[in-house]
Image 1: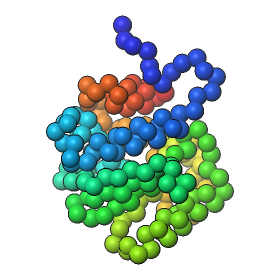
Image 2: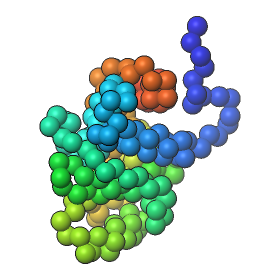
Image 3: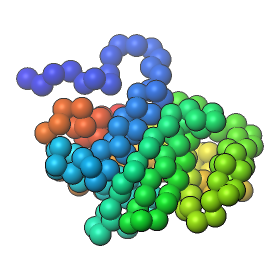
Amino acid sequence: MNLPSFFEDDSKKINFKEAVDFYMSWTISCADKKYKNANKKVYNCARSILAKLLYFEHANGLSFSNIEVKKRFKNIDLWIELTVNEQEYALIIENKIDAKVHKDQLTQYQKIVEKHYNNKPQIIIEYVLLCPIPDLCKKNNSLHIATDFNYLSLKDISDVLKLKKTENQLFDEFWFNWIMKGK
């Protein structure tokens, strides 16, 4: 018999936003090359997820380093700075797991980010609007069209994992037992 799912209980309303922020933050951090030998399966899966978030086709040939994840920085859910093959990147993630995009919210966030990096024109900035399921992302579509935010669902992101469990209970519970089963 398996243990119960960490993400399911008999609550009427569950707020998953903070849990997703922490799991995303932890997963992205695990992609840093300094963790290569800590758990190779988690490291490789985390690299694939981070490559997907940065809109790379795959993680092959990419070296992720100097990953710094800030939660709720300047009101933005996840603000990640990192180096990919010696190129500086910023990954901006707005998590709309259990909320809707407010009018002009993403436009305002993009302005905040651009102002922050005004003196660093060499940095590549990627924006992600994170939604729980693809259909909900599509409903929010009109609110991010005038921005550089692209929507991704957790399922879209987990598709890069190809059912290769890591044997790390935290990673596998979130990505395989909850997200991939469509919860």
